[in-house]
Image (cartoon, rainbow, N blue to C red; front, side, top):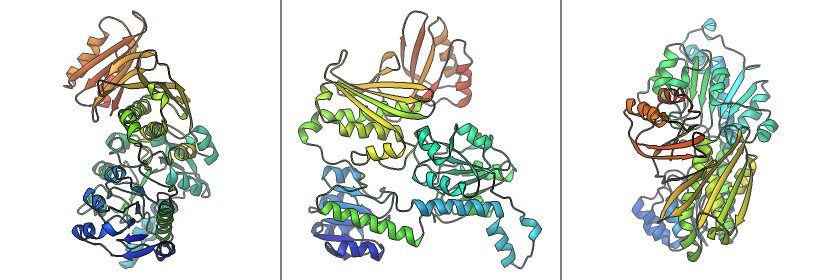
Length: 525
């Protein structure tokens, strides 16, 4: 077996590889050189700079595994690797402690003005009275995203006698209780926290999560930390809030543009900036190298990898039938995640009709992945789906029924939370996916990626649909399709509108002011 390493990894990782294979280290080959080299190797180990394109993967006629010594796999064409049956692995847990410790370090630096005080003293100014700080003891830390890093931050700050609250709709109350963390809404977290730290992936749903509206809710004494992803915070809104005294300070390790050339945040004395150092410790670099190398060895031995980020190949005959249902499983889960209220505790998945005769393991992974999209940085697949759900304290149950009353096949996902149960079902008809049930209502909605839908519960009465149309019309937002379902005349009903653009918060408030309209939620797919 031969392994090609194209970027610097720790010697401990190289030793593991060399004990089992012939290892060649060719640092930073250009794209053409990599294409010409890769055909002789069974494994490729990279970090963030090597672009593993479809061309590289297709040239790797012997490739069995591609390892990323780190977390992100944006530089690897996952789809191309999966189509070729090549396992892609990463090291998502290896830098968890480093990122958590950097978060705590920035929090303490914010509290005591450490970088600013050092800069003044180095410039010859002894100005003790200018840098009176605060204690973190008895302060409230709000953690947005209670995944691997967020959980480790929670464990560490409790040793500093801080109160910890968190917002993460897909962590069970039992898990949070064991961490001694109180789960709260995002709005309450913003209002009550003395420090706020973000630990989320950057997705369409989380981009700009902390913007002008959110910053209008916080205490003027709040301090905000971001060691997760640039783009989670509207940097212009944050800078303005700090300058106006509505936010006491911020510490940023990541930026929407890196390096953040010309950013006014770099010139603000109440902002601490570091150049994406969250994972930059000697121990973390060793850990990611060892973790990646160990998985390469396992795959070359024909064993499953611990952190495979792509699904294994599916037999052609199974793929021909199940393929269209992957999107259905993911879509109904994404809809359920955006409609649900409260803290999720368990997930029920029901497969009815012809689909019940197949191995649906990959569909379960698609459901869990859809539920956690925008919440977890981990790519969910058949290898890690159960582990990720278990780590978050989520109980997932599955049921198969070969009989289906209304459709040839149906996937139903029910999210059971502290506030009730949200149920969404979908199927495939005429070669496209359809959402056919929400709660107790049977509908027929064709979801499209990137589209917006307004879901509203209301009492069936004359004039209500027109009142909703008045709000969308005044907002200059076009309705491209509409579905209405009711349980009985003048009883409870559900309306689903497909919109060309999302409604803003003010429009939602106008809708909720309409008599007999109970809920109004915009879902983005």
